[in-house]
Image (cartoon, rainbow, N blue to C red; front, side, top):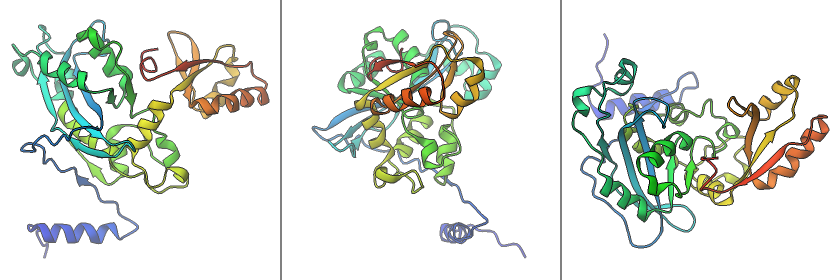
Length: 300
């Protein structure tokens, strides 16, 4: 006889039993307590904005934002969260029909967006209070935000996708849903507000114990992200590397820039000399390096 698990205690017990078994992995839906959550923002502390946009296409010069969500988060001097607002989101009418694939991805329809406008006063008011914007693929989000709100063009951004060494910690992918799955959680994504809340939940998790955790053990992913953003980086470009070096470059984390036709990656500043030494040992031309800070790192 099959038993139906209807009570919360029964479900929790079943999940705990599976977690203890090496042949199973259990995913738990992220809680969504923010519908009635009051804004809990104490005085003082460093302020960051966690932000996400949904758009009608991939080109910030040709396509519009159709949804924007953000959270206002306060952290202490060590990068620990001491307060936050609930996530807020707004829709925007692009004044043209959505492509079917965008409607299917986001769940938004033309009727949802008709006549909607972003609350510029509230959005800019929050961003003005923050000294850093955080997104999971900041290069994408900031392009749309800078175009919609030109006054934000000098705002520093940090990218939780590229500035946290997820692979070092044994993560299977840098996609938000995959990172959460690696931590035993899941959520329903592709709406800006849900993505912002999911990123907030992920960033406050402690670094997962792994062979690469080392000095980062006991810290949260947000603390690592803030450290990376504050330290800056070097944009390393393999300007004269031959085609035959592509596999070696990929193994070292370089990516191909089709527009500039060059392999590149961002390294912590302390690693740049070691990177140049690795090129020399491999018999490759010395790479070029450009210093980056949080203002230009994801715009450059």
